[in-house]
Length: 336
Image (cartoon, rainbow, N blue to C red):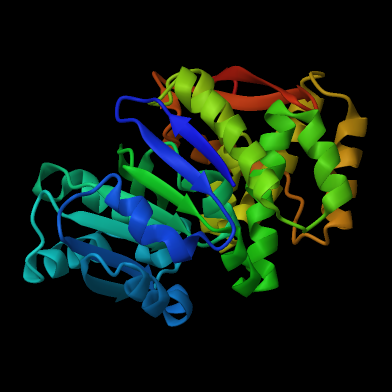
């Protein structure tokens, strides 16, 4: 078991423990004293875990909402539907939302919680590797709009994050591998040791692997809660990856793997990075049998102007100059 304290504008604890779903009632009671709880999940996760979670929350009165949960659900329409259903169910401002699912559910529920009644408390129970090692902490929430990913959103911290690594055993293999986009990203920007550990453990995801990933994310988030400087480094691979994800209908983690290679090529062309690093990264991709594709990064440069990191016509692109060390590289529109 591992715990991480996130001391932000709204502090909360992350608990990482095998079979934690059995103990969620007692953990939530520590941070929430009211009776009513509203679980929002998707059809795939709900079919496996909703009843278990409802039964585990024996101290509470529980109602649930189930949606389809694919990336297409991160829309204004789904956001409006969730708000409508919560109002119909009688939810009030002081009552608790629970996000039970992967990154899509976490982003949606966090955004609903940030806006409905001008703010409701919510708990993250991430069930995908991608969400457990990345998206469930740090407070980024949002929806896609007009073909652009996460372009509408808010920073909204949960009151608790409960991570049970054993739920990963029910993930389809493609979804498990999808999560390694974020795991490898963390290693490349901040930890050569983690990169080497993945080489050894391969697809074996332990409490320790999740913990080490979240320590890296915690380090960056605590320095820069609202993504104006140091936290931007967590976007490594994402400036290209978000475009690839929507343009070529890739899973998020797969698109991040592709985006990492684009960013590496960009850094090589700038003479910031040695070509052998790309060979090492692709070697790891192949060892894990990850689904990745190589693109010419020039194809995506015109879309940079829509990126959230476009500040005063300058994109702060995240690059690495070696495995385990990242930098912020400002790129003006004239250079693009």
